[in-house]
Amino acid sequence: MRLLIAEDDPAIAAGISATLRQSGHAVDHVADGKSADEALRGTPYDLLILDLGLPALDGSEVLERVRKRGSTLPILVITAREGLRERVRVLDLGADDYLVKPFALAEFEARVRALLRRYAAQGAPELTLGRLRMDLPGHRAWVGDTPLELTAREFGLLEALAARPDRVTSRAQLTEALCSWDEELTDNGLDIALYRLRRKLADSGTQVRTIRGLGYLLEEVEGA
Image (cartoon, rainbow, N blue to C red):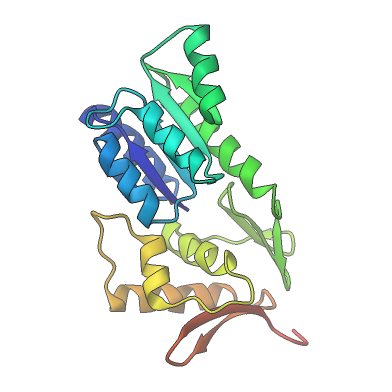
């Protein structure tokens, strides 16, 4: 999943970015509210982690703008501002959860997982195709009852394909889903990831089909 962090403290941003990337997410980072608002208008994210005390545009204003656009993007606010009145104000503006600094990374990860799970459950809490089952927020997959061992990149690739059922996903869309702004995925790197994913899906009743000139489609194999 692709996440945006809007945080002006470099140490905090680096710490939570590394934690989320280790969990297999693509992570973008901005350090001011104006950049956050622009990024949110141009990129489809699965979660926003938002500091309130941002320069250029306060985090509360970023939050208000997101909700006024009608977006249901899950938003986790992280802030040094304490107090019940402040928490109520931010939740009323449309935040989904609120975490006061300093916080333990384990609790932060748990809040992120809970938000992603909650929003995935509004659609399908678990995706099933052939014998393949996927828990997208939990970053887990099985073939039948057997866990499917995937690298973070392979799972991200499967997740990007599964997020567009019955629709073709282009190479550009796959690359965007797998990479944050400060990462690069070569054509060769994408081809290698696709090859390895296809091998691991061989007995799942599911395949990644190439639609020549357009992209790729995750589909059930008839009679498998």
